[in-house]
Image (tube, rainbow, N blue to C red; front, side, top):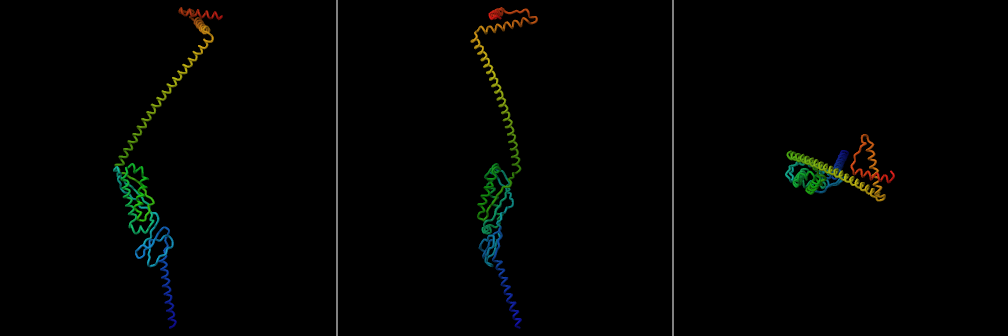
Length: 298
């Protein structure tokens, strides 16, 4: 009987130890929380926010505190959304957008908004419509980068109370309705035709200018040549005048008479030209020439 009592006592003691060990393990499991690097845990105590646990080992009060939300803090991308918008000049556009964001304050996100993605998508759609409504179509196409920056800043202000940081906002595409596309194509073709006409007109104008420049250059060169020839004739006249001034008029007359005699001799020596009829004034000139030649011993 004593042995049986001892066995029962030992078994009872072991059960108690096992229960204590199980309780200890449960307490440790419930009280120690290991949070991954990419997450944060929101802890509640009796239904109220108690703490936000960061990455690493964290301790909470077992059975009193509990992890109510496990929030990923990685950057997220909303599904690409397409919404209609009307520009200031009444052109219907279909704008495709994409937004990237991350949760920075989980306690705000889980207690202030239910559907984060839906709320951000709705906010972006409203802001895009409002901003495009302030711009003409040409401004939307030309200032897309500025429009993206404005949309990002406005979305950040709108979602700030939700503990969210908008990291990027993109306008992926801007599509026009078919009627607007056809009108823009006609305008583009007309602009190309106008530019071609302007280019042709400018070419014709340039050709006329070049022809006029060439004609002016030719005239200048002709005038220059005439001026040079006149200068040469003036120079020759001056040389003759200087020679007459230095050697006297008689030397010049002598050279003229010599040339006259040479010309008369050439005429007389030709075939069938032995008889020469000259004017009386020429005979007097020849007489003077012969006198000069005789006087010089020719």
